[in-house]
Image 1: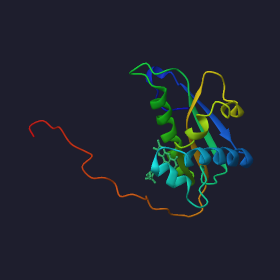
Image 2: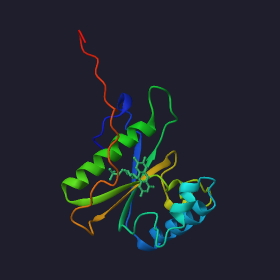
Image 3: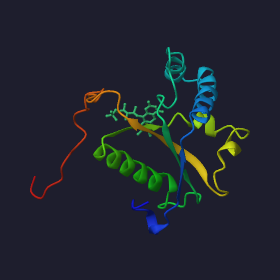
Image 4: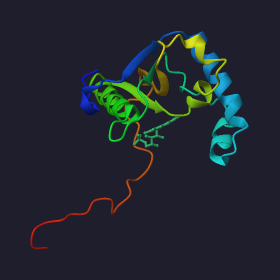
Length: 156
Ligand SMILES: Cc1cc2nc3c(=O)[nH]c(=O)nc-3n(C[C@H](O)[C@H](O)[C@H](O)COP(=O)(O)O)c2cc1C
């Protein structure tokens, strides 16, 4: 809630879900949709043995945004700043997290959405899975790309 937001609109809502049955139901639904996705990497992910949308985490926070985008204001950007703060804050408490964009396969279904009881006027954007870590140290899976920083300095 303390993330920066354009024009201080604070266009976010956080739904904390701590109900295994609900999370499993959301996962089952999304995975079923993912299996029929036009994107090959999404289909492959959904086909993996034991794949769970939220990695079986016990707590999931659904972040929703209000306000349509009015550039340069964007609820999506503001909510993403809030999400990144949550990931960093959780890590400081030794709580593992995963940003879950694929939850949109659940959010996009108009029939499923009301079951979340998100207040009117908000649209779910992303979710964050949280839980105590199964392993103490999980290395970052991908090497970081090089060449993503450049400088503009006087006289160079
Ligand atoms: C917008 C966004 C959506 C993401 N969605 C998912 C997701 O649905 N499932 C998942 O397992 N990871 C998801 N991730 C996590 C990325 O896969 C992960 O950040 C990336 O592989 C780099 O790994 P690292 O964060 O450990 O450095 C998402 C990350 C971002 C920023």
